[in-house]
Length: 318
Ligand code: Q46
Ligand code: ZN
Ligand code: ZN
Image (cartoon, rainbow, N blue to C red; front, side, top):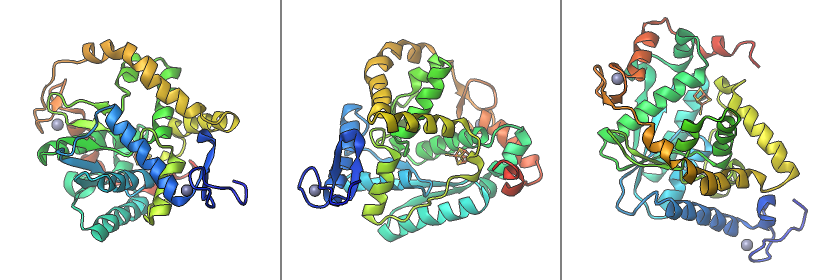
């Protein structure tokens, strides 16, 4: 940003430049732009109503704290859910940020510990299954988020996925033409067969914008990346998109938002035909297409395994 840049709205000194909007903004009008983008996403996709009981999955990072803050600011009622993944110091610090945010504002935060409540953690699960950590982690989070929302009587589960996350997943799915995944890559998924409604109100904001939201609002968030993300393809897709965005501002948002508007409706048939008949998991009762759900199978394997420290799983990967 050039020294002396002015806010597009009020001409006062700007604090941030947003090349994709071809404009600079002061703090007040930057926050207003973020609110507007979130309201637009919520209204366009009919994500939330004022009567909803909302559960926000909170990691302690910028996106989840920003979305919780934004929803409260917009007048919604929302509790938080924190799942301790047992990823060494990263999890300790992320948990501290989530708890501090809730405590400072007198908010309810449901806390679950994978190790304490389910007898395993992500480094151990990755070692036991010999698969990438994010696979066991994603499976565990999805199951526990769904379960907490259903058990707690919440009508909607909110996650902090931002435009960069969604565009990176979209690029990965497009590279392989994963039609089933592409059909489901929507910022709102309706409740069905024992799964809660799931929404992503930050889908129109980039991660630079959610970080700036937190800085301007004085929200203390965990800046470090998860140590187990190293080498994951998602980061590579983000870097590719960022390189394209640097050359052509706005291309990342166009890629994702135009997919939602132009392509996703054409895939709607795949969303309805892809459903298997679901039955209750014999162990935990969650909806599953097999006899025992993937989470219970993972838990059985990982909780039998001797605990593996995170350092062992990240050594030599940097
Ligand atoms: S926490 Fe889990 Fe992420 Fe870490 S292990 Fe992968 S999925 S990168 S959002
Ligand atoms: Zn301004
Ligand atoms: Zn189960």
